[in-house]
Image 1 (cartoon, rainbow, N blue to C red):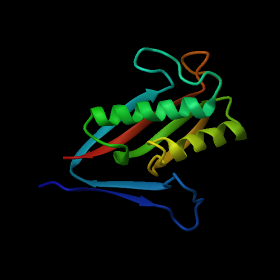
Image 2 (cartoon, rainbow, N blue to C red):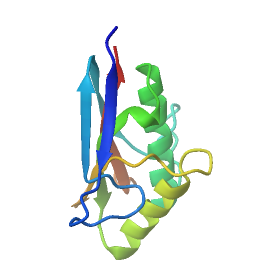
Image 3 (tube, rainbow, N blue to C red):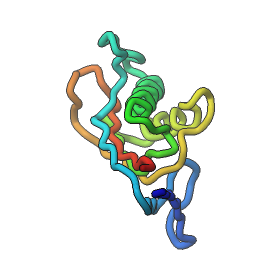
Image 4 (cartoon, one colour):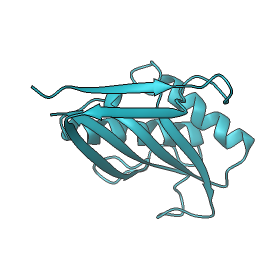
Length: 139
């Protein structure tokens, strides 16, 4: 039987805060899942949270959960993500982090390696947040 483990490491000499794992090691058998950028659109192409970074990030994280579950995993299997934020500034990043703190039915999104990247625009003019991710599933 193949076993897989996901180890989250926060070296004491690197920045540490809730929701972030500086290093994630996935070992053993399994498959890697690459999840396309998820945004604040519902499955009927309705925008959630126009003008609201937190609401849009919450919907994007919800969509990310739906995507990883479709592959047979859970949000605990997400090892890395990239958060693209239109017009990134301190307030926008605070709102995205606030969304991450309550995104999973009022609970924090599991810690994983992630980067926040400021961008000029996303695929739609009303979009403020998009999140792509990588998950590792057990064999």
